Image (cartoon, rainbow, N blue to C red; front, top):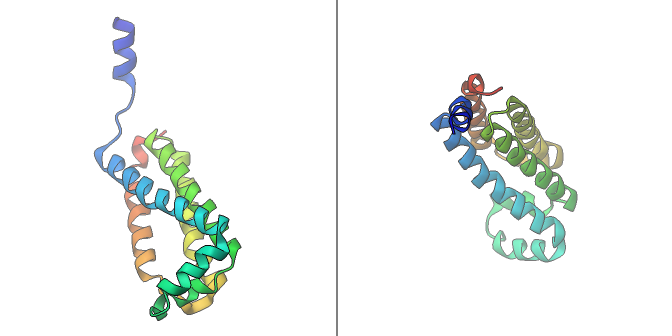
Length: 142
């Protein structure tokens, strides 16, 4: 009984901010995993629906020209972000590096596929904020 209690006490506690960040990443990147997978698997049908939905939205027009591999790569990036968050949830520093790498690739990918057609300001801001806040929690990870 005492042994079991000592094991529980020695396990490091995840900070509340790290918990919140991971949950937000699970939601946001998890949604990305789902959406990008659906688009990649049913590319033609989804693009047809998107043409109808985004017909009057010029700021999203670039998505209508996106090839299937853009969505496949985005799926892999989102899955990598979730994997990084899972590792950080378990207090592993490796998760921070996986998450940060995936997010940087996620910022670069639209430039590769669409050039200057996108407005990434909000994405850059959110990515920088999350990476900064995760980095502040590195001291609790091993």
